[in-house]
Amino acid sequence: MLTLKRTDVLTDACTHYCPGCGHGIAHRLVAEVIEELGIREKTIGIAPVGCAVLMYDYFNCDMTECAHGRPPAMATGIKRIQPDKIVFTYQGDGDLAAIGTAETIHAANRGENITVIFINNAIYGMTGGQMAPTTLTGMRSTTSQDGRGEHGEGPPLKVCELLSTLDGVCYLERTAVSTPKDVIATKRAIKKAFQNQIDGKGFSLVEVLSMCPTDWKLSTVQSVDFVNNEMKEAFPLGVYKDKG
Amino acid sequence: MNKVHFDKHRCKGCGMCVLFCPQKILRMSADLNDQGFSYPEVSDPDRCTACGMCFRMCPDCAIQVDKEGVKTSDKKETTDVME
Image (cartoon, rainbow over all chains, first blue to last red):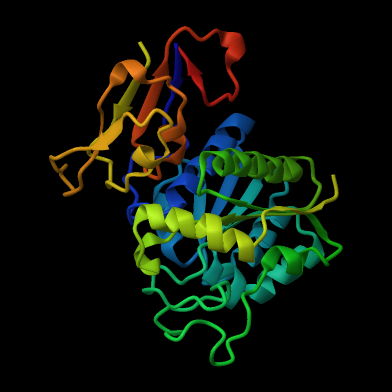
């Protein structure tokens, strides 16, 4: 008999995420990859500030928490002191693309041998639905009530496209968790990002388009449709850089 | 027999499993769990193919899928547990 079940790399704790949130799926994929690669005993994860701030409670590997936006800087320090450890950061769009843009770009440019999992839900979730750098043009949030772009907010920040111009980056891929096919593709991408670090190839980032039904003010079904129809159009999926 | 187990205490009632079940044999319960959410039930267990779509889409890892008659060589991912 074949059994699909919860991996031991996740703790038994119930997550605090809202119903239909994509973080839970992304957590499971990261945990399964850690188990499949057999690196649980030497993995150090870095939790962000944002919705995933409590993720150290959900992972059965070494975890740490870091100041807002600074996980790539902290990962740089940990990886340079302990190069035999596998270091990954897990960050949202507010953490990685707003307050932490400098840390992200410079860690990528230096080609630090770390893995970054970037969850893009186009809004600030934890603080109640304010506009994020990745909020879509025309999308309403509590701080862009006429839709983004009407008052000089500019277009959404495309992190994969931005980082693909840097020589230090090894691997960039944008995926989603809104359909079973995308979930399987996301797991493959995350596995490759971890394998790159094991092989010493350098900076790998996987951007995951994720649902936020609560702050989008949509039902689960509508939020899945929103990712599939609107977000995938603004943020095309695919591999943006792969040095092999 | 193929079997889907739901940990109803962990479920937050988002309905992703119901949405993505290819056989359309899942429905949300009339009862509520301890957290106050309705949870999924299998309306027609005989039609379950144990495809694992509900497991893959569940954000709360509240689902376990048992598939009968699978050989070890069919194992695709190491996190698929053979028993």
